[in-house]
Amino acid sequence: MKSIYKSQLIFASLVCLPAGLLDQSFGQEPPAEEQTPQAPAEKALPKPPKVEPLSPGVFRIADQILLDMKKREIRFPAVCNQIRGLVEYGLVHENGKTHESLFRTKISPRNLQTALLLARVEAAKGFVENLWKEEREKIDVSASQLTIMVSWKSKNEIRSFSLESMAANANTNKPIAPNSFVFNGSRFVEGIFMAEQSGSIVAVYADDTSMINSGDYGANNDDVWVAQKEKMPPLDFPVTFTLKFPPKKLPLKKD
Image 1 (tube, rainbow, N blue to C red):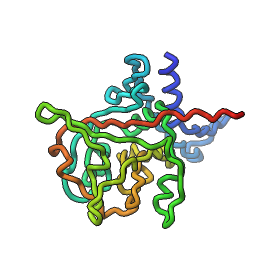
Image 2: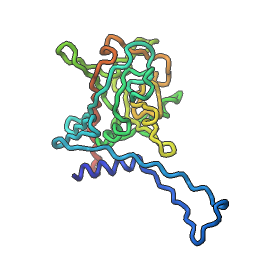
Image 3: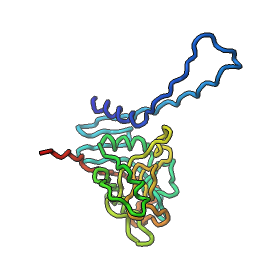
Image 4: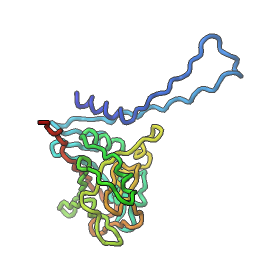
């Protein structure tokens, strides 16, 4: 029960913003023509996702996301969305930019970010901004790197590839560099969780609304990444995404 309560508190901290106080007037009401317009009603805050413990260290989040703390991985379903042509995303929500993404999913970006935070994956600060610099700074993202695997069943065998291997640079014919994907966390603008609005989950081309971005050298170029058809499942074929996250770093002991 403590784990569920803690997860709900974390999620609430992501989506709750200070509520504005409504002005109150006392005494006799002024004539109707002198009344000031009332402030619009505040939007209801989204409810925290349901977090169900299945076994020690294993949780189901919002029905479709499985968090396994022992294996240090998060799993959820998706669908093959594109097998050829230019891409800017590895994964988007089904209502997102599906015209330029390898895969699409029904899961909520907000719920996935909740799972990553429950797994204590650190959001890499300044990571996306650094991708746009002519000379990138060295940033330690070891606590934020994600190994993303895509798997599916084909002719009684399980096929599995890293997401990096499924898109290549058309200029160099090289796939996205290994260990490129980093959890940077999406941002809020005027109380709106941007990944939820844009549907961006895993970006190949740098996107500060996406919660996960590629750190490949060509991540700031939007017209070089193409789908690797030979690594892709058939179009609209169901797949499983597995996000493997790093172990929590222990603080260094002081002598």
